[in-house]
Amino acid sequence: MKEIVIGFLGCGNVGGGVWRLLEDMREEIAHRFDGLSLRVKRVLVRDVNKTRSCDVPAEVLTDRPEDVLDDSEISIVAEFMGGEQPATDYLLRALRSGKTVVTANKVALALNWHLLQAAAEKSGAGLYYEASVCGAVPILQTLTEALPANRIDLLMGIINGTTNYILTRMSDEGSEYADVLADAQRLGLAEPNPAADVEGMDAAYKLTIMSSLAFHGRVTYDRVYREGITGVTATDIACGSAMGYTLKLLAIAKRGGEDGREIEVRVHPTFLPKNHPLARVEGSFNAVYLRGHACGEITLQGRGAGDYPTASAVVGDILRAATAEKHRHPTFRNTAEPDPSLHFTDDWRSRYFIRCSAVDAPGVLARVADCFASEQVSIATMRQEGAAALGRVQLIFITHEAGEKAVRRAVSRLDSAICSLESLIRVEE
Ligand SMILES: NC(=O)c1ccc[n+]([C@@H]2O[C@H](COP(=O)([O-])OP(=O)(O)OC[C@H]3O[C@@H](n4cnc5c(N)ncnc54)[C@H](OP(=O)(O)O)[C@@H]3O)[C@@H](O)[C@H]2O)c1
Image (cartoon, rainbow, N blue to C red; front, side):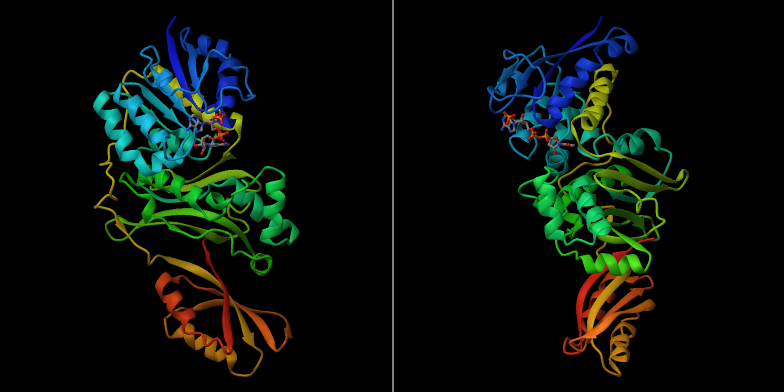
């Protein structure tokens, strides 16, 4: 029988789930993996007296990091503390001493991946991180293990459950953002400080990791364009719906250009046609839609958070680490700077939903149309909404595909005395 000794860093939602899943699967793991036994020897927490969701014995808990990091019997360190520090320092210490790391921490990985990978390569330790992106949905394994024979040119994901829950409820109920957010906080579905979710940082960290693996080059967090959902209104969602679209916070990574090295990475609210595979992903679910030149289109969907779904990814990584003959690392040059062979663009092409409040008078529409025409932005559909309250009407345009910068220039030309911009939302097909 082979015994692998594990140390935990953290034992909250995810750590508690991992402890329970390891207990739950003990016999099946032994049966499926030649008698393999996974023993958790020490568990680092902040407060050893806190009540836990798992029955970890008191003598296993510690608040001294060295009890995990300096124990030579521990060969796998599983981290679910969260945050960049001190997690990154602890992971580096573990890797430098030859311990394999399994982490659910997207922030530490997205910001310090190059350091972690260099330390792992130097000591020969493994670095596993499936749980850092989309919980139970095996998107990273899919990219690295299942689809290596593909050039991936598109990843589009709903990769933050909190914002998808909020947008789903706004769409279903016609409610405003602030009301649904407050309710989600009451229900424990949004954090007391929701910024990381609603301002798109969480999705941007995950996109950094996914797109680096998809494009075989380091995509850094600072290259991801980011817009959250705090400015989304019930009016936008209702107008989009009337035109056949559903609003989602999407993380998008595309590769194009003549040499296939032009990269765009962006997180922002996006309208999708109602029959798009991602448009039907509701509530706190996650999904990633990808396209490879050989495999075509694939959609993966499932639970992106929660104790057991995340534990599913962590324990999967622990098993891969425990049974690997040699640990593998991404082959691209993993540096602090973005890969110089990838050309990042912020002038991507998309379709646009543009909602304006305009004076209800003859000639106004023609002047608005001139602003678009002067930047070669062509309008596919136009709709006028509602009665002329206070002499103004809502004008909603959906453009044909156009350049981001041209569209921004066009809307900056609008004369606010007759037509003011209310919202500009990208539309993907
Ligand atoms: N929650 C999810 O569904 C989910 C899904 C995917 C990925 N993740 C990632 O998993 C990680 C953990 O998330 P979580 O929801 O489990 O967080 P959590 O419930 O807040 O748990 C954090 C744990 O780490 C311990 N901890 C934090 N800082 C520490 C420090 N400086 N020293 C010692 N112990 C420390 C805490 O100790 P105490 O218990 O004593 O406070 C707690 O046990 C994060 O990186 C998160 O992004 C979470």
